[in-house]
Length: 409
Image (cartoon, rainbow, N blue to C red; front, side, top):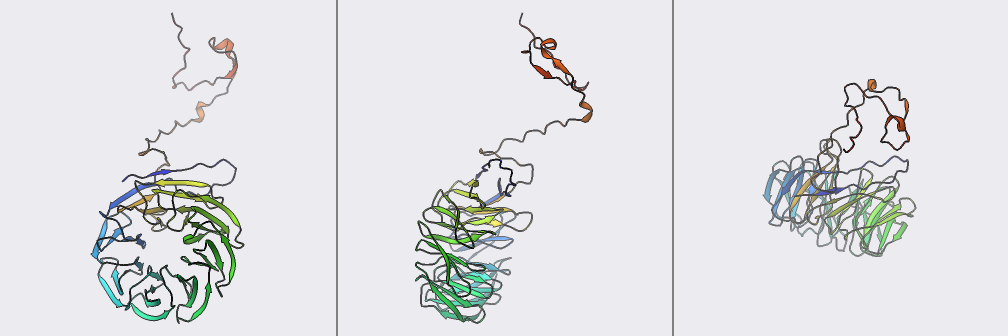
């Protein structure tokens, strides 16, 4: 599999350039022989891919080798944490040991799971097709509490601190106490909410073409921003901005506090997931073989990655272990899982693949080569010159001499 990177230059403005993830080079590529049902989930050592034949494969992030595989069908995206990966086959949850795929526990939820599972700090969250949300202890699958929300739950829940936030298809956002299951508040938006980013407040987009900042304390709207299309996926933030994508193929950056527009950039291809931030760049993927990166400070395009086919799901940003970070793992629609890392040797880049060989380093100038530079009239010293004043430096005795060009007979 061949991928190519493009690194886009910036005009010289005197400011310190932002750190860059690019250029990237392929470290390994694994052909899983078939497409995936869902984008992979990751821990620090492996990727876990649910394949269309009902197999769950664990792939090493170090070398791309398949550590183990097991016939474990799952109807939703798995969850991983604390040495376990959890899959859901209808209403049955299975927890598999990440080292070898052995079953560690099994729980019957009595209804099919409707949205991706969430693992956070040992808490396992499952939403069901009957409108229930169930909280379990991830270590052994013990059910701690469940609550009926009387609505369709098909978007991944979010956990922030002691609170659980649920987006409901009918437009409601619900906040629960994670330990007790007490409903803290609910807020109705103008459209179906997408995945919620819980920080000091809640950042969430909806299908009414608005992006919202809601008070974490009671769900009241602090501000909202109108877009030209439905919001897709979860937003990301840096110190000053919140960034998200919409189906009018725009990447937006708003001031986190005020909601004022900072910049916006058009995208090539329809986005399928929210952006990610790495090395002061917002990385965006969509229905396209091209993954693009934008400087979070001003939205200027900072680089691009082109694969041989459409990318499947968002890239995974490698932050650990140190020998891999920073880098990306991408999945293609035809079943390739590819690791892309920054090169460890001298920097090199080309729009062509493979890149040309590195040029040899220039010969170092020794101090004893440098002598006073007398001013010589070239009209007298060099009869073939045009008569301008030039500086001619004597050369080291070991260096080759420059001779005048020979005249034709």
